[in-house]
Image 1 (tube, one colour):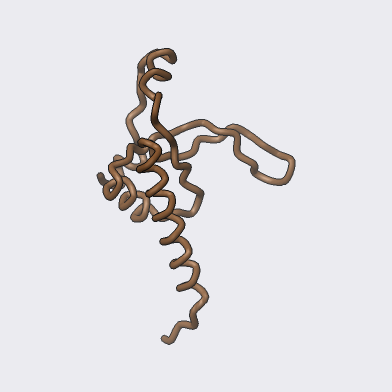
Image 2 (image 1 turned 120 degrees about the vertical axis):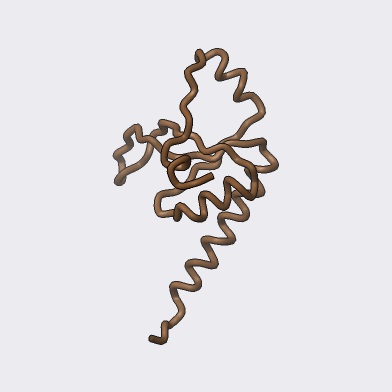
Length: 104
């Protein structure tokens, strides 16, 4: 996977009924804004997840929700759960690193 493939995931042209059948047993890991492309690509490759664009209601500010296009990584429940745990672990580590003093 490369950056171009990540930015332009394939869109399905199947009917809604067929899509629902195809999605049975699949789960989505919603990627929060600010996650780096390199980490997303790492998740896709490490856990063999499919990047998909999805329209979801997103809270922009308090009491304001609007439909927005978000990136999700799709796979079976066990794999998505493992990827979620890995994502949280990496993000926590990045946050800890940001809090450390830097010597220039």
